[in-house]
Amino acid sequence: MPARYNCAVNLKEVVWHTPDIECEGCVRSIHRALDDIDGVQQVEVDLLQKTVRVVFDPMRVDETRLQQAIEAAGFTPSR
Image: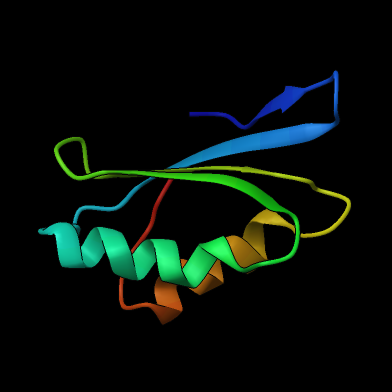
């Protein structure tokens, strides 16, 4: 899914398929990895769809940094 921009406030949304999300513990781990990153506005982890959706300010953080945070938490996100 291509990244989308929210022009009203210059936010960007990206969704990664993350097949190794298996439980609520995984969901919490991903939230912990992303929630405190400066520029992240919203994190949604869907256990059933195995996706991670992040809304962020691209002037403060980039997609690469977010993907690296998910990977550092032990998951394999892909687009």
